[in-house]
Amino acid sequence: MENKMRVAVMTGVAKIELTEREIPIPKADEVLVKIEYVGVCGSDLHYYEAGGIGENIVKPPFVLGHEAGGVVAAVGEEVTNLKIGDKVALEPGKTCGKCEFCKTGKYNLCPDVIFFATPPVDGVFQDYVTHPAELCFKIPDNMDTMEAALIEPLAVGFHAARQGGAQAGQTAVVTGAGCIGFVSMLALKAMGVTKIIVVDIMPKRLEKAIELGAAAVINGKEQDVPEEIMKLTGGQGADLMIETAGSEITTRQAIHFTKKGGTIVLVGYSPTGEETLPIGLAIDKELTFKTVFRYRHIYPMAIEAVASGKINLKGIVTDIFSLDEIQEAMDQSVKNKADIVKSVIKVMAD
Image (cartoon, rainbow, N blue to C red; front, side):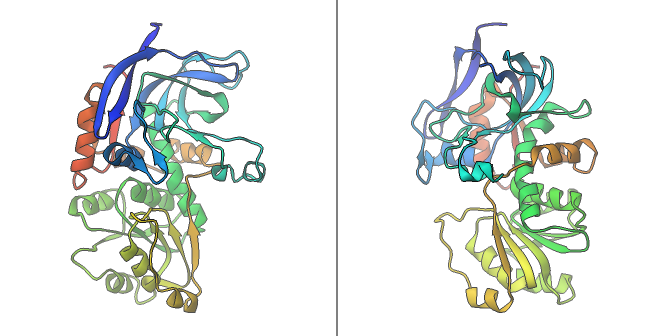
């Protein structure tokens, strides 16, 4: 094993370049993972394009990327659950294990979490990374490491579906046909929901939604969304709505088209973090609001769903770039959102 590895470093806003660093050495409870694929997340693009998200400000040099799949290259002396050669999906957040949230199982709410590619913690756009073995989940032989990388966003989709109490027989609406919208739809389908309506304003994304199994799609730019949903549901409205667009408009619409006693799950962040909503109507309809922050206890279930064939995870990928093309990958993903739904960086050499 060579002592040097390639690392894609963000050197400024919308600037990224390859450099070399020493390959890290795993601690006793860690494994060294040779990264093969990394998904490009919306948060990566926002850090790249704007230099920060809220209070999380990028201070270059900084490494983006947190959706990783790879192969175990070395193991720490205390590691017993993994061996060299195992294919793994990396859960990117290391929590404290001691706070009330960790102790009650809601570890995604840990205030002291250390999360890949959340400043100042470097991400995984690089050849190798060390990570706690307990956060590296072995995938079965019939899955590959691209699917392993995509388990991270799929976990968000499953958490959203579980927060909403998804079950067979429901009609669900997903607003926003981006990566998180699609994985939410795939999670809903895996949990038995067959009537799923997807809303977006980009025609190619709506075409992709039909390809992935949506029962119907609505172009929010050209159609009256609440009116169309009421037509599609025989005037009943939706049982469950998952909002991934981060739009006040779609959240307001949801309150109108969600059935009395229904559930709205908020996943997407609005640009300002604030929305004005018709709460009086929500009260009259006794709607339940749920929110999603990352996920918890999801990876094993998500891996099983993909391995069993319930979910075509690769179906959401529209573009694959090599690590050498990282600047182009980020630029295209920012500028061409109408065509690029999900980009993946292929880190391993051909």
